[in-house]
Image 1: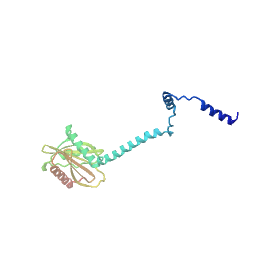
Image 2 (image 1 turned 180 degrees about the vertical axis):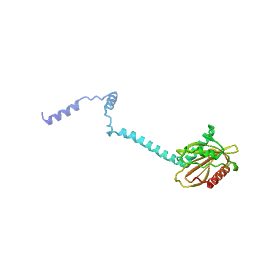
Image 3 (image 1 turned 90 degrees about the vertical axis):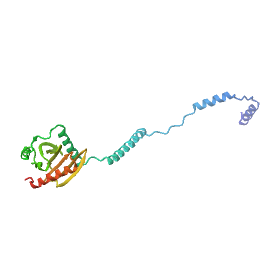
Image 4 (image 1 turned 180 degrees about the horizontal axis):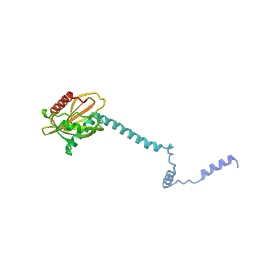
Length: 226
């Protein structure tokens, strides 16, 4: 059969054949089946360790924020300086002596008894002066530990108030004049002279404590250590 004859036969069959329309339900079933078998769109390729770096990247941002907050808070709350640290140590030594009722290892108002007692216990000889005539009698002395070194603590009295005068060797530090301050309900004054550091602390009024420091320094100037 030639190509022309085949084409003519096909046209004749189409012309004479009976046509049947598909019912609507059949069309809906075919459409539903096709939608279920339609392939899902391909996911984008995932790079190796992508999830790992995304997770740690978020944690890195949180860590960086934490560091920034710490730096900012640190700028508002600086660490204590040398002066504050010594002030805290002096107050702690003063309060400790009052709480345990251990004001003196050698209880005496005689400076010639108190001063020799420190001999061999310290690498310096603390200047001891009795200020009873000026209203600040000597009560005794004891060993203490301040600024990471042994110190002498001389105990004086002003009526019902106790004064602790801490003394330790400051080496070659330059002399400093009297500085008055208040901390935690106590008043303190400190100065340095002739290679020694002095800190006086009490619940006396600032004016009376300053008077004590002036009287002690005057006596010290009149009889400096040899």
